[in-house]
Image (tube, rainbow, N blue to C red; front, top):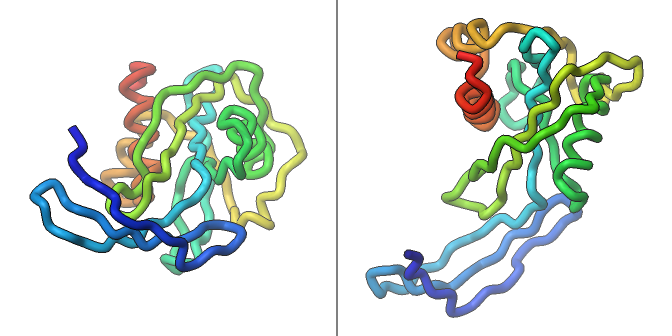
Length: 178
């Protein structure tokens, strides 16, 4: 049950990638509060699987954290339907393509500051093409690993991106890969 009430809402910042709203609300316990909400298009996360159920991971450098990490391919839907966006992002970031796609579920990205949703897809029996934009995306490496290795990488803090970890856990559980 959601007992939050919005009294007012105004956009206080807008750019091509996101906007920020200032919402005046009444909390479930009746208090007035102000929240700043980030509005962005939905995000897609892709679990690219080989025929042997190995998953491709990408290694990329992130501006905000000033670190390089292993993650799964992901990106903005750019207001496309989520499946089309997932196919586009997978090919752009890895050069991988698949004819066998299914949606695994949805994850909340950062419920404390946005209503943005992540849509998690699995691409099975992926094939490598030469078409990609890895360098433009900051991707410097790609590898395929078993789900057992995924768990070890999480434990060893080689995979620290929260949405990637959540999507990998969702895939491992739903596809019974652990």
